[in-house]
Amino acid sequence: MFAFLFPRRRVAARRRRPARVRRFESLDRRICLSAAPVIGGLEATVGTGHMVNISGFVMDQNPAGVQVALSGQVAANVTTDANGNFSYSGTASSLGTESAVATDSQGLSSSTVQTQIVDNPPVVSMLTVMETGNGKYVTVSGEVQSASPGGLTVSLSGVVGASPVTDSSGNFSVTTQASGLGTIDAATTDVWGVGSATTQVQLTNAAPSVSMMVAETGPDRTLTVSGHVTDTVEGGIVVTIGGIVSGTATTDSSGNYSLTAQASGQGTVTASATDIWGLISTLVQENFTSNAPMISNFNASLTSGGYWIFTGAVQDEWPAGLTVTLSGLTGGSATVLANGSFEYDSPLEYGNVEGAEYATVTDWWGNVSNTAQVWVMS
Image (cartoon, rainbow, N blue to C red; front, side):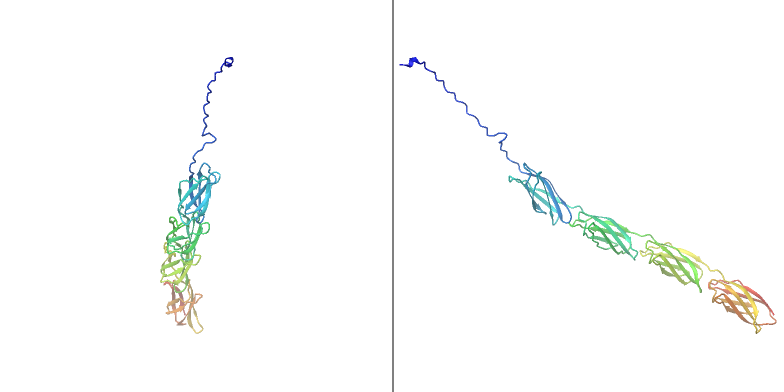
C-alpha cells in the first residue's frame, strides 16, 4: 500500500570488469635457455725438457670458474679466470694430440677441441773446425738451437767421427783425429726425438811452401841443406831432398829443417814439403858449385942434408886432407894439413939441378887448382 509513495528505482545491471591478464614474462623475470660453453684459442707449446704449456679461453654466459678437462699427452683439470682464460704447464712423454672439454656452472659441456703438440726441429749452427797442431787432430765446435738445447748428443761423421754433448746453452766442442781432409757432417736429435737437418763444414788446408839454402859444411862433398816450411801447422812436415843430395828431413815445431849428407857431385839440389794431409809444396831448387882450390906461396928450400923441400899453402873451403901433386923435376905428392899448408921432402939433391917444379891440387868436388911453379937451380 505504500508502494505508490516511493517510485521504483531501476536497478541497472551490474557490469562485470574484464579479468586482468597476467604477464607470464617480463624483461626482469624472463627465463632463457643457456648455451653450452665454447673453447677457443687452444694451443700447446713445448718448453724446457718435456714441459708443455697448454692455454686457451672459454666463451660462456659466465666464463669465470669454468672447469676445463685436459687429456691426451698432458692430463689435468684447470679452472678459468675471471675473463675465461686458462693455462696449464705439465710434462708430456711425447708429442701428439691434446684435447680439452669445458663444463660451466650449469653443467653444460663444450664440444671437444683438439690441438697438436709440435716441436720445431733443432738446428746445428756455427759449425767450425780447426787444426790443433798435433798430427791430424782437429777441434770441431758449434751450437745447437732448440727449445731445450742442453744435454743433446751431436753426431759428427765424415772425416771425423765423434759424439759430443751440448752444455746447458747448446754449445759443443770435441777434439779428435781426422782421417783426412774433407767434409764433416753434424746432426742432432732433441728431447722429443725430432732430428735436425745435417750441417756441414769443410776441413781444408793450403799446400805448404818451402825455402832452401845449400852450404858446404864438411870435407868429402859434405853438404847441409836447410830451410823453412810455411804451413798452417809447421811442425812434423816431411821435406824430401833430391838431386845431388838424397834424403828426408822433418820440420821442428817452428817449421825449420836441416839435412847433412854427402853429395854425389856438383849440380842441382831440390826440395819439396809434404804436410800431414798429403799436400805437396811447389818444388824449389838450387844449383850448387864449389870454387876451385888455389895454391899459393909455393917455394923450394934445401934441408941441412942437402935435399930440396917444396912447401906451399892451399886455399879451399875444406883443404885438410887434399892431395897436392908435384911434377917437373920430381914426381910426388903431399897431403894438405888442417891449416892448408903442405910440405914435400923430395929426393932431389943439391947440385947440377936446374928446372921448374910444378904443384897442383884437386878438391873434393874434382875441381883442379891453378898450377903453381917454382924454379930450382943448384
